[in-house]
Length: 260
Image 1 (cartoon, rainbow, N blue to C red):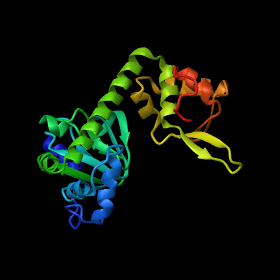
Image 2: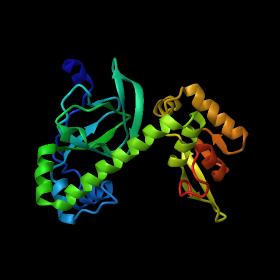
Image 3: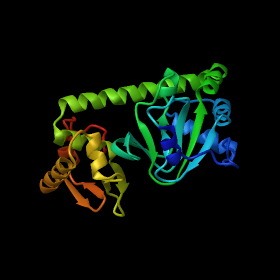
Image 4: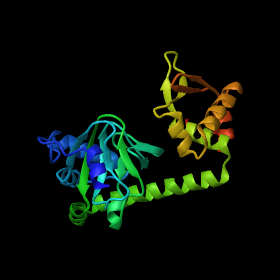
């Protein structure tokens, strides 16, 4: 297995081995943003930034494997990384797409265990890895960092719990509608109006996998919502025509903040 993984795994870049490719203040600011809404001091962010080991990887490379020990916390600086189940060198099932400024795995290393999923790059990426023991020492010196990491992990647990409840209680249409609401971005129009748009950055098969439905079911739900004039689909962009109707389909209260 290790020999197989070596063929896919990238290695730390030479000149930027310890995260020196980006100025310290910029690295600290990125870390503060990644831990928001919790606030960490500038000194704590700089101390954490100095622990970063920088990895520049091409697409299709394995960042970590679920059968290997988790020794670090991982942050995506640029590019995208998919999480899921790797079989024969490719993701057979994708559960999540992690984008810049998001933590790829900030939990497994604390448990002295292994990641629950495999992580594979979706194109060129820049990643920062933080040795968990070094982060532990940094938390002792900077309590605001410890508080921010606790909040980060608590938010992730809550998100996973909400997702589990959604899979248990919602039908396929409600799950898809909820996903659209969660990923909708409000764009201002030239006439002062506002439009909610969803960019489909992942393949429909990957999105369907996250929602525990088949790709055919996901496409069918989009088609039904379009026929009811709730949404419009053009290429890889979904335009929300009736936000309240989409909220009703998701089982969310009309007038809630999602896609507001």
